[in-house]
Length: 250
Image (tube, rainbow, N blue to C red; front, side):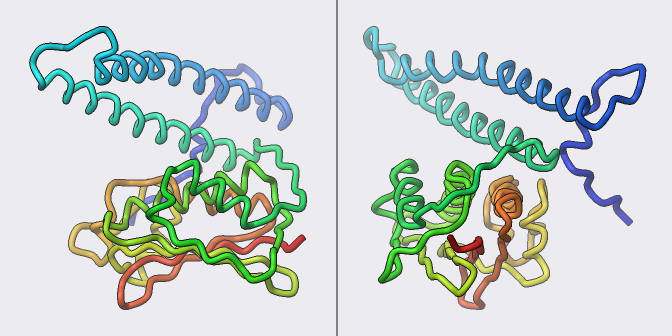
């Protein structure tokens, strides 16, 4: 029987002769995350910057065409690594209760449109806004981060010739936002795995073709919880994954 995965925040071990008070431990974790964020991003910024210069041949031709191709591969790999680092740090902050949120009235359509524009995915996303504007009681940055994780995950699972669908509606006390991809179906028994870090359906299981391990869904779920809401997943038998965000209505 495998041991259940421990929260990422519990794996951050700091040397100390005496067990610190809760406030001190939280501050130590904040300092650790700030240091890790700086130490990981600084060399990565150099990799991204110089690979961009090489790929764009800013100072002249590189010679063999393979050099340009390799520089582009280095740049794209660096961007994926940066995304993973950001997700890891976000997940650690959330699991450690270190995110300071400021909920306010946030129009849902504006948040969705900002995320789609940020991901440069206007042609691949079909957004169906409600007939009347609705707003959630949410932290603006956390809401956009959760949506960015969900939409990015959906785009990765959806082929270039199909679209990700986003819809929103308001209930009496809740706002619901649905992000639907056009990827492979996921067996109901495998859905809980997608919300746990570093887990995915195994080879041969339904939904196993959804790419590499991702922290997008667990991070989005924790962000929703931090804002007083939740995230649920479902998968129609015809295929695709539906991520439903529920947040307090403003």
